[in-house]
Length: 306
Image (cartoon, rainbow, N blue to C red; front, top):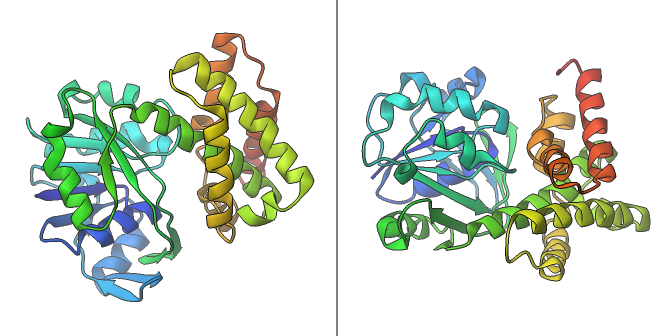
């Protein structure tokens, strides 16, 4: 199987590295020139739970020419439309395209560029970071849930098998939308708060005031989620958030990595900002999500990122 990782940042490197340990072909796609140069010259350097270096082909999305069997979408959310335009030449009649982006609403964007039967959506709780161009930091364990937009799990069984060969703990989920909301809740309470407060997840959850802030943001996410999707279990997701906060206590989440460490624009509009938008449409107040969205945008503006 020929697999492209379209968006080879921290999580793209995680998937590219683990899939490289199978017999399938993996090609990384990215537009960060320093990243491309580092991996092309020195391989992908991996630290954390393992110390390794793998040689993986990497190129810009517009330079890819071979028709893919599978494309894993992992660009930043605001880059998704351009990425889908740039990779249209490698999407064949039978190519599956899997979105693992953080946030909400990506399947709607994908339908503008892809046939419904090509689309898969998924959610992953693997963690990853970048220490620099071509340098991935991989720590901890996770899992992966995916769903076809058309058909059932039998149609993508070889893809699930490939992921599990790579140790990605994949499964087919007939209700992955609930899982996407669950992860959005996790990211929505952890990512912007850690970015604004410049702290780890453990530091945030280790204070009464931090936990109080998390609870208010969470309540807004749940209210909006329950207005849009069935099967949203408020108590179960809260337990999951608390368990995640303990497992990832030393981790700086991706929005902190983007905004504080690398001075890049964030995905706030696809997390808390999306909840504000959906809340207005449903008549649900979301003042905490509005506040944290404004704070992130203010910080982006101060850094000249908007």
